[in-house]
Length: 99
Image 1 (cartoon, helix red, strand yellow):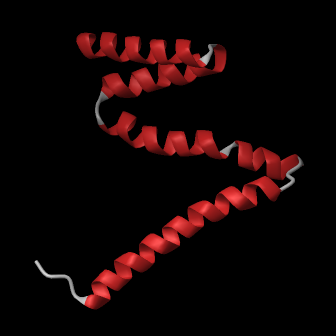
Image 2 (cartoon, rainbow, N blue to C red; image 1 turned 90 degrees about the horizontal axis):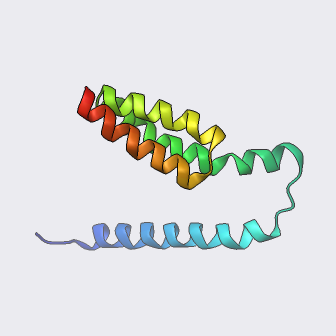
Image 3 (tube, one colour; image 1 turned 120 degrees about the vertical axis):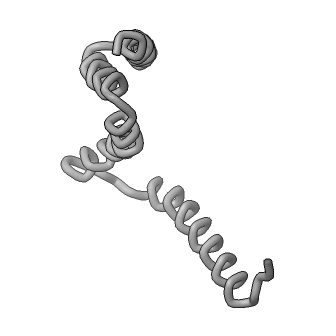
C-alpha cells in the first residue's frame, strides 16, 4: 500500500481540524454565560449523547437487553448512579437467563 501526497495531506488536515475543534470547545465553553433555555439545552447534551450510543445496541441485540434497558431507565429516575448501574447489570443477567 502506498500513500500519495493528496491522501496524506487530507488525513493531516482532518486531524488538525479535529484537534482545533476540540480545543476551541474548551476555550469557548469557559467564556459562555448561559441562562434559561440555553443552559437547559447544554445540560441535556450528555444524557442525549449517552442515549444515542446505548439505544441502538439495547434495541438490536435482543429482548433481554431491551427489557433490561427499560428497567434501567426507570431505575435511573429513582436511584443514584451506582444503584442504577447495579440494577441494569442484574436485570440483564437475570433476563438473559430467563429468555
